[in-house]
Length: 294
Picture 1: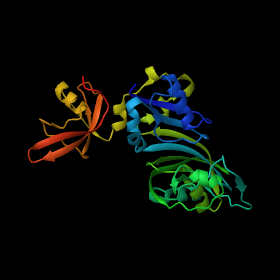
Picture 2 (picture 1 turned 90 degrees about the vertical axis):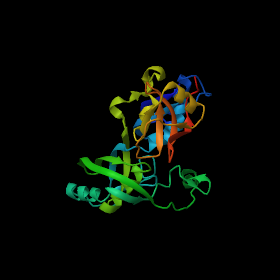
Picture 3 (picture 1 turned 45 degrees about the horizontal axis):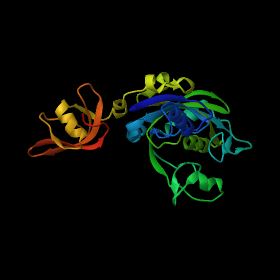
Picture 4 (picture 1 turned 180 degrees about the vertical axis):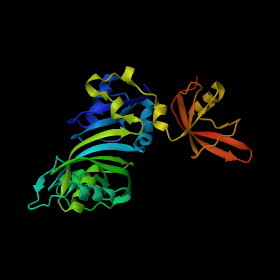
């Protein structure tokens, strides 16, 4: 199988649990199945699962804009910045007004420096940060640049705050909750989290894990490549690309990026290729080939 599944992950299982379940549905552990963007066990929502050669497209899915709905509890902190950690109530924490919260939220829109949670999958000296944190080891994670496109407060009844976030890859909503609490002077942690979208993959068209049918629910892999220019090739050139050969293009192609999605004339994804302009014309050199020549 070659394609993607948009699964509505429930609260409870890990992202790996979802992948394992799909792998059993498609024929067992020898089948290639992966996911594009981890969701913690306490989180639910959009989890894109990649089947077969589409596992090589996971990075392209992960780079797309993400949407989240986050429940944030004010007046307390968590050592993991979420509901799964050790919760510490803050005595005499102030009760911020809605206008103050909205003002603070605006300060996070744009490109910001964000310190990832210690309980994360980031590598520290060859080990996962969460393993070091669970072992009680002290370490510092450097801040990273992340993009927050929009934040909106959708509900507030102290201590419960709900926000909608649109953000780029690498953003930790748990860290965002922590930082919002720090700016408000109340402390905060993420008490619930739903991923509502990754690019075109939205919660509205996600399939429940209990009813997913890999054959019937599979999505064409080209869906993962919205940002790339697509070039349809005739059967001869399609086979040459499938064999890993560089081809010359008959017609000039304009593309904002040197990477191109190559399809057959029906729109089926064949390969990812690099566009090579030369004085003699334009050439396509395959980078990732997904099908065999016919």
